[in-house]
Length: 152
Image 1: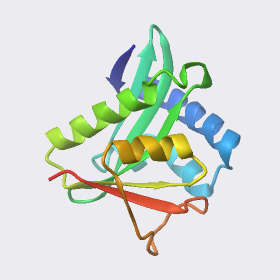
Image 2: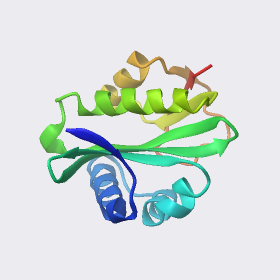
Image 3: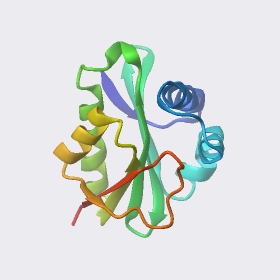
């Protein structure tokens, strides 16, 4: 397995992986539709990035870093196909993403999640994320936890 950067030809994989994940655990919100339908506009062009895990020719995982403010990014749209869940794909993707963010000199990452995603919350905490108050700018109706990781 290898981790690769976004290319326009992977836009459908990005959307499909996330839609499948959202429909399995929650529902697809209007904010999701916008971002997943046009990742170049909402993630890439403002200064974010998207990574994929490729196993041979198949995309089996993804994560995005969406710019919120100067030096502050939201770690979002993380999904791994069911066939490789439990094989540390998410943890590898998380380590790679954190190394990337640090190499860019960013200040912090934030995550909006849901407490029922116990495995994901465990990975976030293991990676150093700490729970903080959600505040008023939560873009997700399903989000009942906000976490932050200081990179500096």
